[in-house]
Length: 210
Image (cartoon, rainbow, N blue to C red; front, side, top):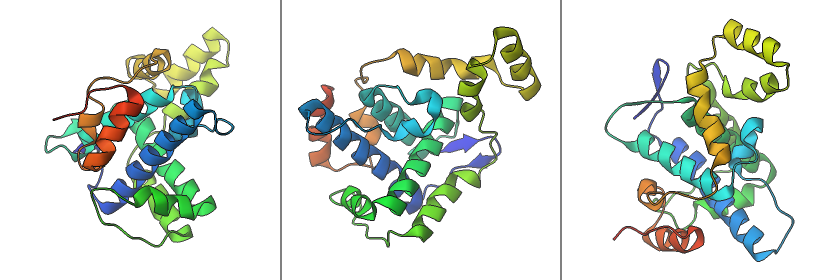
């Protein structure tokens, strides 16, 4: 379970939809980018401006890690990076539901759950509400703005807002990574089918669990 401040993220079909859409669409964009088939489009994590340059493989790795903590029977206190991933996945999936509903339907096909849902503005509202109903400060959305300020002023604002620099460090670490970890595919249990695990393993050059 993933705990954000005082709330636990519900383990629901709605959270499955958010993570599933973010995963499949970003993986598809990575594949198209590698094949040079179209103009590069950002992955789901671009919904958090500070993290928009994170490598696609790392975006998928971070999503897998947060998903693994979310479906765990053990309670995990969410870090700022977990909050960023959750917010981005919800916002990304909601935007897809509004602008490209057929892509959401495509993303839900072939997964471990035989799930058919109406893809409309109501679903987009529910996906955004999944994150917005949780008690959180959204500090990750402020980091990019603070970096544009002079050092002294930035430090003053961080103190005023109570932003813990230790919590911010993982966001910088994500920007410096370029490759997925060996545990990526294993962390996606319950989110992808067996055939999809093999496809992702080949795409990202990571081990596939036996």
